[in-house]
Image 1 (tube, helix red, strand yellow):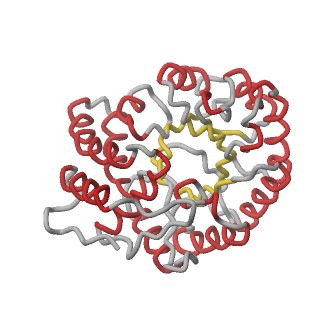
Image 2 (cartoon, rainbow, N blue to C red):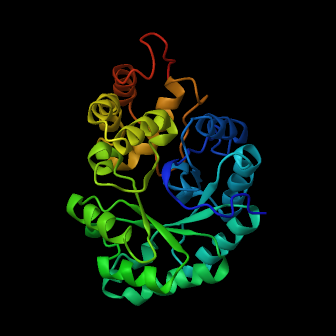
Length: 320
């Protein structure tokens, strides 16, 4: 049963991590503890599961269902849960969407199919067919995950407008265009349509600059570690308090630079290690092809956590 039937994606939405055992099976106890920690942050408006941050690319359909079910059982009565839809084929995407609806999710975050990377931008009908198939499987609100155009998976501006017109279930985009001018155009255009579509920024490496452009919220894997700082920054920007926003951003910057350093693909790997250092996860195993980050990077994270004031010097654990 859907627990938040009127949910509209906006505000501060952490994307949570997935705890794993040494044999790379799901550690449900630790995953639930992590979810509780995120749900306890005052000011968050929802939580996303089965996204990039929880290594959805390496999870089976049954594991994704188990993750969503456990998440709903743990925090679903307190906050809306957004379930990721990660699939290369539209039929599988629709199956995941229908499962999320049955389990009790409040919205869907739909990833672009990798199958569209080799020219799908020139075939807008492919995007429309994909999202129609998902919308036919459920009436849950849909968040379109907008990727950078350069990688071949971003939807052109006109394609997004067509999607909004032809698939009314779309209520928001998660904007990772990584283009400040395009990002601002998205915000100014989509949020003022006759049927507004919210823009949720995921530009976590330059979050303050992005928030000052006026998005309706943020959806970020970094929220798995610093949701409290993201809430504080969002509130300060919303209030027009530049001094307060700068003060919070000064704390976020060292962590953003550590999390999003090259290679970019290790961002959530680093977030797991940060939670281990903070004592909020027991271990930081990841599924291949991801591998454990080098010891030097873990020490960089330790310094960044101290500089950000997230943990006192001497209070951090040794990484597992």
